Structure formats: C-alpha cells, structure tokens
Amino acid sequence: MTGEITLTGRILAIGGVKEKILAAHRNHFSHVLLPVGNRKDVEELPREVARSIQFLYVETIQEALAALFPAELSAQASAKPPYTSTKSAEFAEPPDPEHAGSVRPRK
Image 1 (cartoon, rainbow, N blue to C red):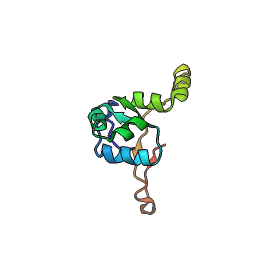
Image 2 (cartoon, rainbow, N blue to C red; image 1 turned 45 degrees about the vertical axis):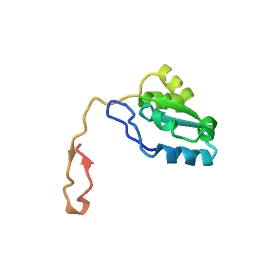
Image 3 (tube, rainbow, N blue to C red; image 1 turned 180 degrees about the horizontal axis):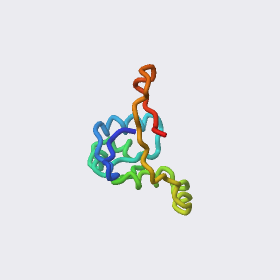
Image 4 (cartoon, rainbow, N blue to C red; image 1 turned 90 degrees about the horizontal axis):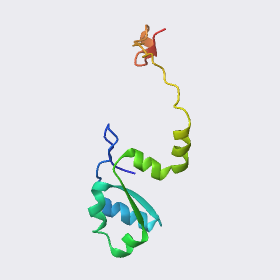
C-alpha cells in the first residue's frame, strides 16, 4: 500500500501504478484498490493483466475501509461510539535530567 490521505480523508493519486499492478499480477492478486485519480493508468497495462484483476477505485478513506472491511464497519456503525475524554492532557518536562527526553502527564 502506498499513497497519501488528506486530513479530510481524500485519497490522492499514486505513482508507479504500472509496476505495482504488474507485481500484484505476478503474485496472483485478484483485487486491487486504486485512487480514482489513477484510473487512466490502468489503461496502460497489458490487456491480459488488466483482465485478470478486479480494480476498485476509491476517493475517500471511508470508501477504502468499507471495501476492505465490510463486516467490521457495518458492526461498528450499529454500535455506540467509543468513549472519548473531553479533558485535554497537560504535559510537562520531567523534573530530573535522568528522564530528559521523555514526557509525562501532569497530575
């Protein structure tokens, strides 16, 4: 897996698609997720390779996760959200130089 995901969850196009797909083909992968921005790169693949792999094009991380983990995501959607603290942790430097570089929460 390579690529970038924006802070808003968009999946950006990747480079080296042809080489990555050829490697997937050599290793008998049957499905490959690609960013929508790489749809044109599949047209450059040898016909035999493109026909042997099912491509799923995604725009967001939510689409990718739903494709990869459909059962887990549907179960999570029906469950209540996990607990998150509303308090922000305050951090301070440790008092002794022996622990310099580590950070501990204030009490």
